[in-house]
Image (cartoon, rainbow, N blue to C red; front, side, top):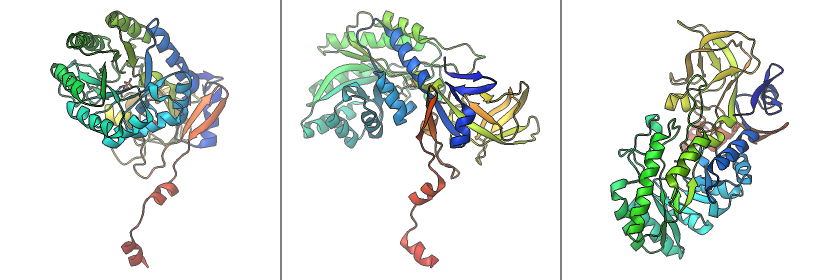
Length: 424
Ligand SMILES: *Cc1c(COP(=O)(O)O)cnc(C)c1O
């Protein structure tokens, strides 16, 4: 469900014609719908009722824009952060420290100190070595660190290999078989308050089965930990629920189905549950709006060359991801084409042999479902300006990240003295 709809033959975001944004800001540009994000946050919360006070910690890495975080913070969401930078973004968007979970396999001493001093809900630790480092930092600062271990349940997530995180060969989490020993060690370390168990098995999951298998293992571990004398009050079930990218494929499980499964599996755990949704909240709340530069003949299908490229939207190149591609003002006819960007890489291909709206040079096109892992991963490769972002709210809209232009990119470089001298 989203708020990108055709009104009078032209695609709108909420009440704003996309062509108005393209004309004012230029292309390519990301456009986000506030109403869509808010709706997703509310649907997820409702689907978890009547759980007592779940903490929904939005996974900031999906879309860290300050205006997105402020929108979700105002809905009562917390934040799941994986770096000091994301921690600072969450705080500056007004998210309370006691709603922040710090995840990630490589937290540094500096990042640990930042979150200990600013406060947080829980560190999700990924190794005994990390627990030892955090203990030392907390002791030095005279603080106590609330912790859980992220366990690796060794389940097959059934998603793209690059976004699967919960099988034994992945870098994430403490192996399930080593979990009791890790908790025993953490309980001995000064400065740590052991309180939770965490799991996150991957992203864009289209079946509940691997999630249920992982959560069932978490439930068993909670029992074993309590038997061993640990006080476990928190279970963090991670994120990962998939969203529909391609309407020709079966839809992933709904938040309602997910919520029903969680309530069934976790009943009797007697913990506060934490969720870390990213894509589910923002994925289809965004589109990448781009303009057709030219249509070039091809050996099988013509190439539609758009002014967005892999540096703006990396998911197709990185994960073979599928995005729906549509004309902003469709003529009613369809054609089979290849859609590519201008970057000098064969990987800069958004779709091959795709049937889509017929488009002419100069016309506007959108890539749908580009609210998550899209602008967040954009770069300036090929010395292309960093794509701007726009947030729509009803009939209002605002630029929430300016285009980082070439002058600013050149100004960030420095030519050393010896080269300046040689030039003179
Ligand atoms: C990326 C990530 C998430 C969010 O995943 P989604 O698939 O976007 O819901 C949650 N938790 C952790 C630890 C992550 O790394």
